[in-house]
Length: 320
Length: 280
Image (tube, rainbow over all chains, first blue to last red; front, top):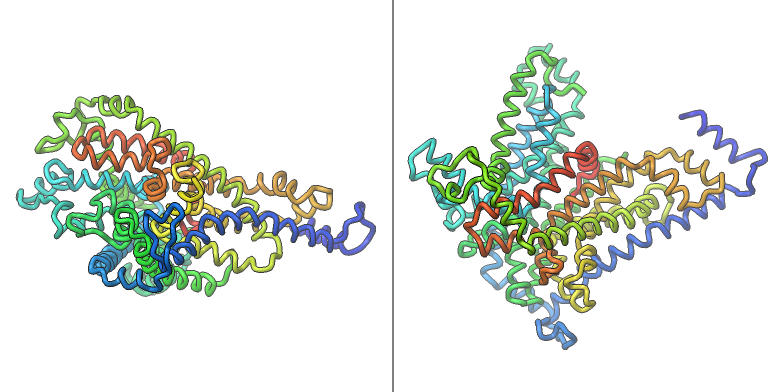
């Protein structure tokens, strides 16, 4: 590795070269190629991602109706759409649901993911195979997972109710998704199921970066397993944990498909989290301006969490 | 690589048993999907469900596969997913190469922008795309759906590929350049072969994301001609809510490509996941 490098370098600087190209022109060619290479991707993202998002900002301050879609006029209305959006009690109901959904999902998927990561950090036969099997839950299309949990939580023949009936009195069986009191819990359960493997995977990467000698030394000093966990693993896992939770916040706050497929936001808006609310305003009632405004408000949370995440990445120093 | 725990492999088998049990409980829903899809219709709604489909029946699959709409939707999903993979690699590889290797002005800002590009919820993007694609005549087309899905895969692809490209020895490229190979030639003949594992990871994950995508399919495709199979499954849940056998057979059919791609390429997928950490 080292020898050819220095050989090339010195070859560049001095002595007759076989071809009449100076390092300067190599660099210039490289730079031009760089711009050319990044251009298609940049143009694409500008057209399909940045422009639509900016257009959404435009929509949010104009009165855009379905009839005006095909070339009508859409008068400027200032912040009216934002006012309409936040005056809607459904909006704040959705915000509350999103907060509960996100907090519940994060709490359970993180703690379960952490426990599984601790288990899978130990060397045992078939570790890799079992870990991969767990990941399948995360890889399934959300629409499939949603359908699956609808069936699992079904009152009459659902597997969960059958299990509950098997271990306890029949009254434990419950129509989880059609009862407004429990529908959100059912949706959270499904989302936790989807999120656990991903949490486990990232936390496992973090656990592997801990030097085992720390544990060995502590054990020799008489620290028991709990003490080693509490005073070595937990502090050293803090940065990774914050990252995992931030990512979880970003992804959970914008979950749409799983909830939409399981309940459609119902029963009686019991699960209409913010993303479902935005969908309804925009695509069901075609109140484009208001929908765009509500959508941009929905964007705020992932954006703030994302900026914090990116700053942390920078802070850790970009070594990769 | 030895994790926290100072006992070596001694006594590791009991841990395997525990882990296997947890995995089994965790994957119960998936088992239940397959189990239901193989259960005779008169047994599906039984008071005490059958834990094993005995005798198993394939009639739900026969019903599902005789449905032209399902076959069409599966084909649509395949076309869209392959399109997304192709477009992602086509745009992402040179992009990542430029960001990894060329001293560009503003490349730091671009990487930052790519990280932020993964934040918007699909539904926030779907709303303006709905209006814009309609104006451009791209609604209800494969192109419109592939373009929309690629916004999910391209930023993450560049972020995963950039460090992979940085790991390619610079000397190899320089040698090729000095030997008269153009920049495109260097990328195709020297760099691509070395970064094959990264490419496979990106291709596999892009396929999985596109195959499971739902929001854009729901909002940008109103015609069954182009609707992906995820949208069909959802519509199916709405109209045949209690035909669980056929529903689970359909869900299983949709899951098969996912599991196959993952099983075949899991080494790369997991690596790519760990490298990316920022998935859309």
